[in-house]
Image (tube, rainbow over all chains, first blue to last red; front, side, top):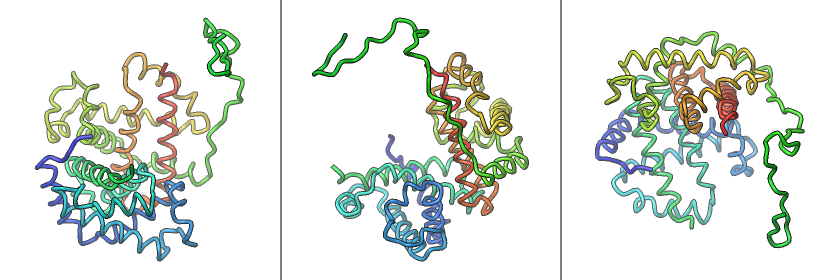
Amino acid sequence: MTSLTAKDKATVKAFWAQVSGRAEDIGKDALGRMLIVYPQTKTYFAHWKDLGPNSAPVKKHGMTVMGGVADAVTKIDDLTAGLLSLSELHAFTLRIDPQNFKILAHNILVVLAIMFPTEFTPEVHVCMDKFLAALARALAEKYR
Amino acid sequence: MGAVRGISFPRAPASRGHPLYRKTRAAKMVEWTDFERETIQNIFAQMDYEEIGPAALSRCLVVYPWTQRYFGNFGNLYNAAAIKSNPLIAVHGKTILHGLDRAVKNMDDIKTAYKELSVLHSEKLHVDPDNFKLLADCLTIVLAAKLGSSFTPDIQAAFQKFMAVVVNSLGRQYH
C-alpha cells in the first residue's frame, strides 16, 4: 500500500494532539470491542480468565497497546526504525498473526468515530487508516 | 484422465449442465439470534437514510479513492469537499443504503434476496466485489459516529455480521 505523505503525517499529528488525552479510553474500548466483535482474537488471551470489556487485564492491555500507538506517532518519520524492538517482540515472543493488526486498527477507527464524530472526518479517517497500516507493516517487519 | 504423482483428477465436464456441477449440499442458512434480529431491525427503523447514505458513500470515495473508478460520470470528485457536496453522489448514497432494506426484510435468506442485485453488480456494473467490504466498513464507521456510545460492541458485532452476509451474497453470482 502507499506510504505516508507529508500531509498525511501532519494530519495524523494534528488529530492525535486533539485525541491523545483520551488515549487510554480509546485503547480500552478498542481492545474490548475487538475481543467481542472478532472472537478469534480471544485465542491470544487464553491466559486471562475474564475477557469482557470491563475486565482489568483487558483494560490495562488496551492502554498498553494505545501507548504503543502514541509512541508511533512521535516516530512517524521512520516507523520501521522506531518500532524495531516492538517488531521483534511481536515476531519472536508474541507471534501474533499480522492479520490481527488490521482487525485492531479497524476497531480503533470505530472507537475514534464514536468518541470524535465531528473531528473524525473522511480526510482524517484516510490518514489514520494509512498510518495504522504503516504501523502494522513496521510491526510485521521482523516476522520473517 | 490426468494423473499427477499418483493422484488422478476427474476431467472437468464440458458443459455446466453436467451432473457433476449439480449442488447436492443442502443450503446452509445463516443463523441469527433474537438479539441480532432485533438489533438490525432497530438500526434500520431509526436510520436517517438522507444523512447516512451520502455520508457512507462519500467517505468510501475519500478513504478508498480507487472506488471512484465506478463514478466517472458523476461530476466533480476532485477532493473531499467536492465529493461531500456532490449531489449525484448524495442521491446514489441514499439509493445504496435503501438497497440494504431487502436484506433487512429477508434476513433468513439474504442469499436468494440478493441474487438479482449480485448479477447486476457483476454483469452490468462490473464492480469488483472487494469493494463491497470497503463500503461496508465505511458504513459501520458512519453509523458508529452517529450512534456514539450506544453502538456497543454487541451491536457492532451484530451489524458487522449482517453486513458480512450482505457482502457475501452480493458477490455470489460473479463468475
